[in-house]
Image (cartoon, rainbow, N blue to C red; front, side):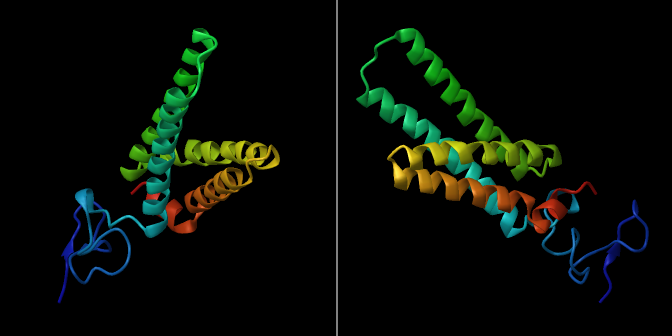
Amino acid sequence: MTGVTDERSGAGNRLGPDAGPGRSGADAGPGGRSASPPSLRAAVGLLFTESAAVVAMVVYNGLTSTVVSWRDAVIVVGFAALLAAAFAGLGWSLARRRSWARGPAVVAELMLVPIGWYLASGGQVWPGVAVLALSLVGAGLLVAPTTREALEPD
């Protein structure tokens, strides 16, 4: 069975059920791209989870802490809101295969490493280890070859 040829890229780029591996074929999504690889899907899920965790932390601290300075409280909540929005925005962009988002996402993941280290060395060992592990796993998923290939421009 032969596939249909993509007119833009010539006879070598076949579309259809027998097109073979790559960005074309039966598993192609919108625009002829194949389904996202597991590493990219996991990285996107992790970014959304981290965004939700930041929001949950702010809500928990807001409900259980006593406000000493309203100015400081607004700064902390504002910074956390920006951080949560950044993680969610990067996750959203990577889910839509925007290649520019991979670099900032790797940097954001690596910026969590000192936070995890500080938590672990400051007496909160398990939360620190969790932050360290998740940040390193997230960075690893983002630099994985399958993720890089999925984000390459057509």
